[in-house]
Amino acid sequence: MGEGAAMDASRDITHLKAIIEEAGIVDYDPRVVHLLVDLLYATTSGLLMKAKAMSQHCGKL
Image (cartoon, rainbow, N blue to C red; front, side, top):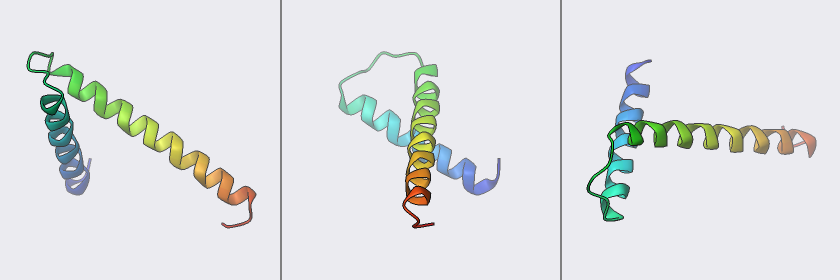
């Protein structure tokens, strides 16, 4: 993982922890944050792949 990717992951973890705290959750397994990061990346990746396929289908790419 490059330095930029590590910084992005660190920023994402910080944001997810803030969201968890804002929801009032104070007691959670720290592994939950990493599971949420994985889910976030997988969902975003899937969405971007579908958007690219739709764009190619419409002749935009």
